[in-house]
Image 1 (cartoon, rainbow, N blue to C red):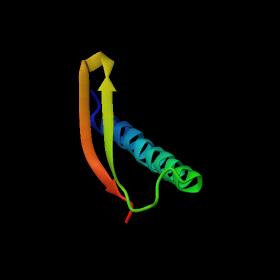
Image 2 (cartoon, one colour; image 1 turned 30 degrees about the vertical axis):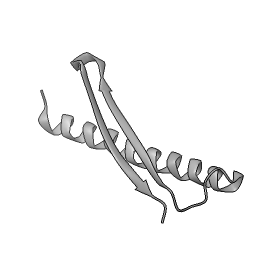
Image 3 (tube, rainbow, N blue to C red; image 1 turned 180 degrees about the vertical axis):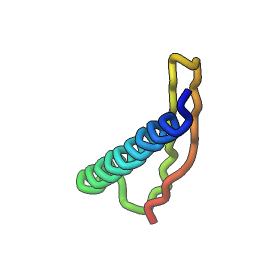
Length: 68
């Protein structure tokens, strides 16, 4: 295994996950605010699941995102 290549590929994947996840969350919050589904002072429970089938890995991160 090439550790440098592995590290670089992992960093690229995690950057993609971070950037696209933030964009999706922002869009969903903006749509919910526009439709009146939320008021803007919520604390939302969030869950992110990482799965790598080849490794039989499933890892879940739970958290909260406060809007105010």
